[in-house]
Image (cartoon, rainbow, N blue to C red; front, side, top):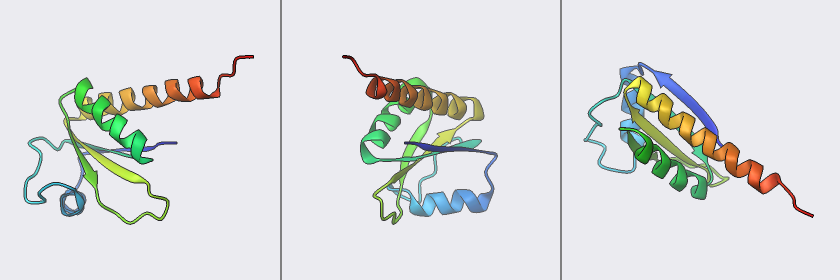
Length: 107
């Protein structure tokens, strides 16, 4: 199950938190941060979500370091608002499609 949020026009403090916790060089910020999409889920879901987001639109995806006892992974999707919304839409549509395939039973 995915947990998804979008932050439009994130504050400097919010961006600072994400930059400190991102997996890549924390001194390098993405070019455009008009919005941030946050997606949390299992590792397999997050690898697929990252791939979907980067293929769908011009966004930058970063893994965000944390300490979740359930081994959940958090991705931050940076970009302009429309691109982040589009990436989140593609990710949630894919998750719903996969869930319907898993829940369908053939007898």
